[in-house]
Amino acid sequence: MRESVRGLTPDLDRDARHRARSWLDDRHTIEAAVRSLRRGQGYAYELPTHEGTWRWTAYPVSALNLLPTDAPRRSHG
Image 1 (cartoon, rainbow, N blue to C red):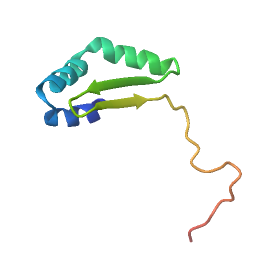
Image 2 (cartoon, rainbow, N blue to C red):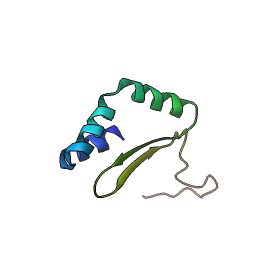
Image 3 (tube, rainbow, N blue to C red):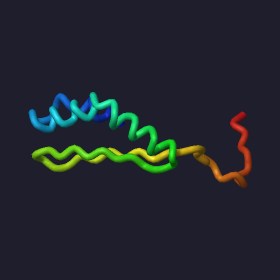
Image 4 (tube, helix red, strand yellow):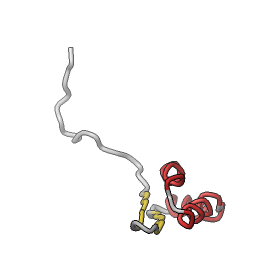
């Protein structure tokens, strides 16, 4: 999330760029995000700009099932 915001920052207007950099440099918001994710809750950051509002959202994930557990195994030999 932070890398995405950081990558967008150079293309923003002055006010939005300042808000984004303030968020990126704020240690308190980093710690709040980590605490929220560790509690199993999501975390979101919104950045209003003249063009609209950007929103980043992170959710905790403990495991991703990429295949159904009952799927037959395939051989690629």
